[in-house]
Length: 381
Image (cartoon, rainbow, N blue to C red; front, top):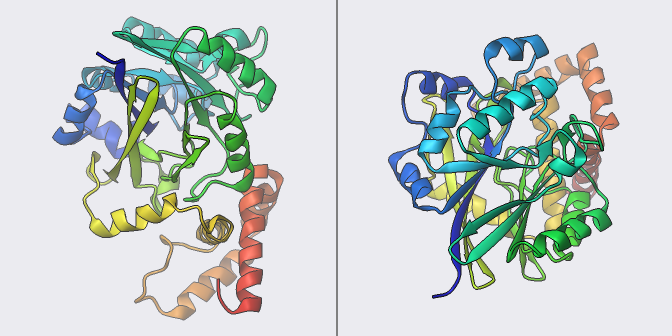
């Protein structure tokens, strides 16, 4: 019998808004079909976006992205028992919130990786075993939030490819397969920004077997580099915050089913839909949505598509009062009036300054400008 292990990766998990309310009422968050899918896996690996803390501690730290402790028993009942903590919200309630999260995970016999009380702990791979096969999971976060140091708690973060290569080599001594979970950089675009794509390509060449990414809050495509699958973003799996409601595609995500057999990895992406009014997650059924999602895996016109997405996201953030694109029944003058009103506000320029200050949002801004210039002078996108 060959070595085989079936694992499932989720997108961002934050039991907030309608999902928190449904959880309080003792109702299921996932459809029966998805619950059965979770239970069929050997391991389910989720990105726990936010600490497991009570509301009082969240209020103390003014944290908005948290997970109610009640979500853990529910996830554990579905066989979701492994979590990456390498993300920018794990320490939103400081070290105290992290220690509470770690304590609850340990008491529930869940496992985690990507964060710790020191750099050594945070960078340590998690080894999963099943029958004859072993998998090493490494969690890496972009440089945002609390970052681990030699004697400082935080998430593991580094852009030093040589350090990561060393960790991969060490993990390879303990496991047959090495998978990296990466969290960070651009948000809301359906294509990864060029610098992140380039870096992940470089990472794929270091001896890793697969790369699974989070943080953009929308589903991005899958690309193979030297046979290594890079899933650029699984989007949201459970997430309901006010800042997402007007953002296109944040109500869709994906579950990545991975079959590891005799050193080979076979993947299948399962698109899902988040009903943020009901607090329910189900398999995506809309044929139109599935057709649209197929385009995100096509990187043949990557530069054009990236700039197009950057323009959409920038306009949606700064000029749209409603989901983008505007309703076709709305009179054109309404859009321009809204735009003029925003241009007259001081808050617009403060936001614009922040956009230019941060590298990730700056990349979106620059690409959006390039798209607009090309459209203006060529007469087409």
